[in-house]
Image (cartoon, rainbow, N blue to C red; front, side, top):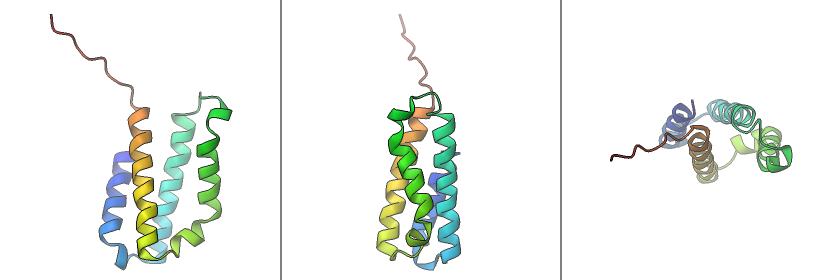
Length: 104
């Protein structure tokens, strides 16, 4: 799911000057839904005091969607870059690592 979202972010970045406010808003809402899903599914068993950062991020994004959507292209692009990095990181920690095989 996160890899699809990362692809959507890349696509939005290439089309940034042509994105409508509605398209920007839909992308931010999609990012927000993914953050909530990752919080619940990946970090659900982590003590709440260790997840304050993501809870604050979710609350901040939720309350400022209209401001994010109306940002200048360069600012909006920076926001997308940061969300892309965060999604990639959360996606990587959400996948259990496969033990490496030792060849004898």
